[in-house]
Image (cartoon, rainbow, N blue to C red):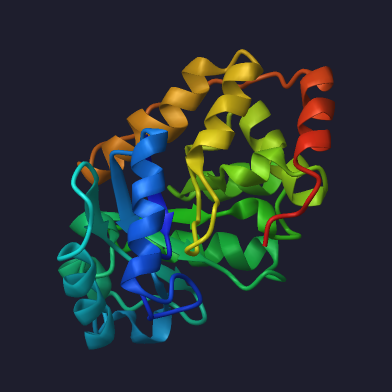
Length: 254
């Protein structure tokens, strides 16, 4: 599996606080079958044109010196769209995923659907492909809104663990997968136990082995190689399995 959204660059944001903490998470990921992780610390759009801050570069050097063998680390940022993204970001790609056209972005949680659509359209017009992190977090998220966002050229990343959540975010995430609107899944690990594996297993339990493979292996791999993504077929969630998942994971992920 390939995880393109993590906060494992130590000591730079609200994620992992130390190299040791990050190494422990990476070791657990290896055991779960993760082969590649993209380190995507938070970065406001107002600072994106300057590239990753020096603190991130220093943290990366410290982490790769201690990272366990068996997992490949890639760089990127999760860019908060607090303002329009500078056009120069598309030219140097220092904050995109692995230097590709794909850039992981997020919005304030109360963003409106039309504001999100306009912002994603501007990024796409610059030559980048916006990868919207966890659209299920936004109150404006609905299948209709997501279809409009995707029409701008954006692609959608649902949180794998949120697929197991019983409340609003989980319902939104499952709805996106059910209607074939999700493009990849990621763990959004913050130095904790969030994992791709639980989401992968849940999809397989619903008869969605193909969808799990596309969301967590094939399409993330295509992003790392700057290739086009494969469409993910809709998946019908079985009510009995959803109820069982709710009993096992009775919490809302942060």
